[in-house]
Length: 289
Image (cartoon, rainbow, N blue to C red):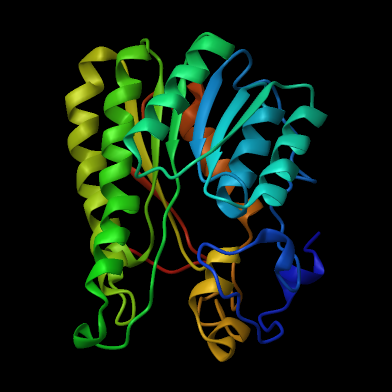
């Protein structure tokens, strides 16, 4: 049965001043706690690293993986209360959880993330490159080039560098999943640099999949459409936030919990013949490619 938040396209006008935003400040709250998700041991005994899992899609994926039997390591920038909530949700289903604060663009943080995972949990089976930022601009002349560099650093360079650290620890059967976006395929007039980074994610996913397939490591991506996350409330103007997602065929924004099952498929043996692909979770928009 659809919840109230899934039925309604409109929401109160709001804006959070700091990117990537806070989960607990969203009005209405989104669905990222996996409340209705029922696992069936698809990831039993696995260990997953998920970047940016304090809120939104990252949190939903962390909880779904935990309910499927995986132990979770995730990082977060500075949203301590949100991160604590994610860790509590994972531990509530009796899975181990490490929450590591730091900036994914920082080399020392990336190494610490991998080293702590190996030291405390003993292995890595799944990597989800999820952390991302975007800064809207109406015209290319309006781009803040420092922010453009930040967008590329977070969205594509950090995932590549983290993956290079993780791959030596992966065995056959491991899975890497990158969070892309619908704008990688159809573009965005207001998210020029973000769209470019997500296009790069798709190309890199395909190339990396070919590079690692002989080693038994599958690489795929998920391209969400408009999903109700803190980044939306922190990035867009209040009027845009109020109608966010209403342009989709389903007439509403999606919820993080509606995206998480695609990650579960790609992380598990149910997706054992899928590599170099992208799953579109976007409310019915037809995307080619």
